[in-house]
Image (cartoon, rainbow over all chains, first blue to last red):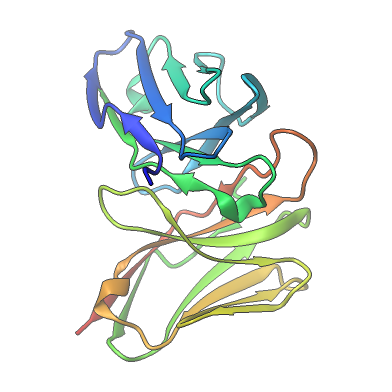
Length: 114
Length: 116
């Protein structure tokens, strides 16, 4: 049973560019959340998607946007990249009916902005 | 403002001894508390959880204690094994409030090293 799959695993972008990260949730899961983990920090909540809509959002600017597709997969888009956007981006999925310990995390996409 | 705090960035313990990882929180609305374990180049893996109506939850070598009045929880690992060496994150979530609930608020993590 495949878990959460994220692509790409590593990415290098130039300041000012745009990036799209992708996530396929675990089979049976319909809710996808995105987290940003900066070096030496814990993961920080960006937003959560359910039924193709953004349901909750953390304290991130509008440069961060997302999308969820009918097959529950999701994309995270970041525009006008800043050096401070360099981080590990984690996708987590769960089934909407499950309590918070139902989250499964992917291995993440390491984004470096130069 | 950091709502979940792990004040010890690292902890070293001898194999076979007890490891105690601590976590403090400030938001009294948190209903669920979770511990995640993270190895390098992998995503966090769920370890154990506790809801706010309990004060202890046990799963094999892992026990989580919750002291609501002190807004403090701890994870005990007994006995510690070298394979337990990883970064441990404390996380918390508010209870259900409709679609999109249960976002996790994480601490900064504690790196546990179990010495053979």
